[in-house]
Image (cartoon, rainbow, N blue to C red; front, side, top):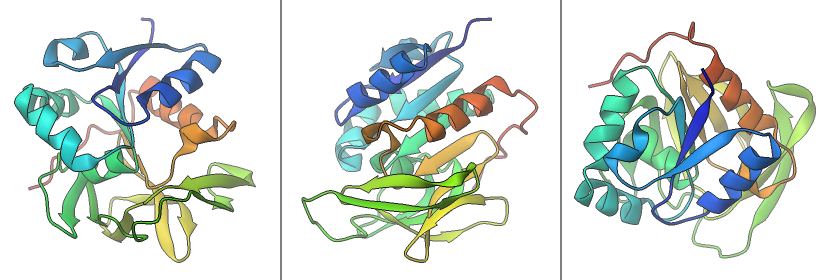
Length: 200
């Protein structure tokens, strides 16, 4: 079956994710309503403003539809605000989330700076360091036992996965390096990764 990836397209930098998938030759569709999830193999939740995403997702019935999509064993990749939406717990201030990965996240963790901050650091995904673009990034404060850290920066996890859920506090779509997206696509292709056990 041909792989097709959804990109949540409420606001934020969803076009940049589409550009990466285009470069990798992967079919994709923008997701704005529950019916847009039909036939997708996985979904990307982009950066932007997590509270705006949450408001529109709730209004459009997407919040429940995405939880169901996860129950079906579909793969998720959240960047920055998307990582906040995937977290089990959100602080600073608290807000609702999909609760799909066992991490606790502090919103606006790096302050409210408008400038991008570009770091490079080691990653489990390859031998070479990874370029990481942070824009008002959240901080992952704690992780559960089943969560694997794939990259860290300044003592905090910045790229984590659990089952078929991948979360990044930086913006891999804003670099020319497709490593993180390629890793997500491997997760999508590999149905043997255990179905996500829901958190309560």
